[in-house]
Image 1 (spheres, rainbow, N blue to C red):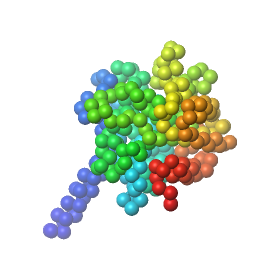
Image 2: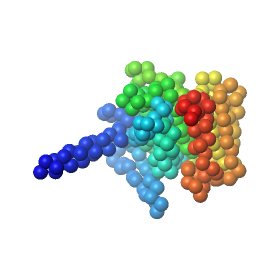
Image 3: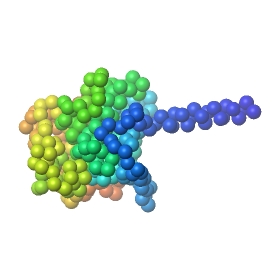
Image 4: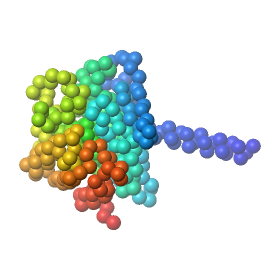
Length: 306
């Protein structure tokens, strides 16, 4: 009987720890939201990849490295999906495992997808969630054994647009921030990112979903993040394939040019092949590009050189 209670207690503790792996972004009412009966949908394809749609309750999933590997660095992971889906496995949990292997704590953001049905202003919902995530990560730095001055962001496709919005619009808080915690990522990694929303470079689906079908020039310029780069923009690594048919490689080229023009530390890897959405899948990824990320982080001293 005693052994039974020990097993039961262990199971309860395990369940409690597991339940803490995913936390809500907000306590109480989500800002910029309105009542809706729309329910979030979870889709699993034949390969077991998870994608979420109609997200209206944002969360943060916590992946901590082994204590023996932990470097104190952390990264906010923002999956892509054209602001219509959140590609949670390919550009979320798979990526978290890569960073954990580097000794970097990883936090996956399941952000609200822009929708007039659930938001007062759909343009701001995603960036609000990204800023709130940065606040939570830095607030919990001691608990998660991370250095609040070594918290970066990685984003993919439309998630790259959101990551670059976070990294270029941090001087304006779109959420309440009473402790005035820094919203600026310490580094950015943008993988086949949507950057420029002009007619010539835009990913139409991402722009339509975020800004609507007929955005004005002021909105397009404000959310074309290459135009928002300045000397305070975080050091950035860009990864893209030149044969990307969904998000033109010109997005990364334009952002890189803006970084260099503003004397911001920048590194870029353009592969001749790989297409779009390759993640780290060995049959799609141009190489194990996360090794290049690890080298870059070591060079910038965010993680120690071996």
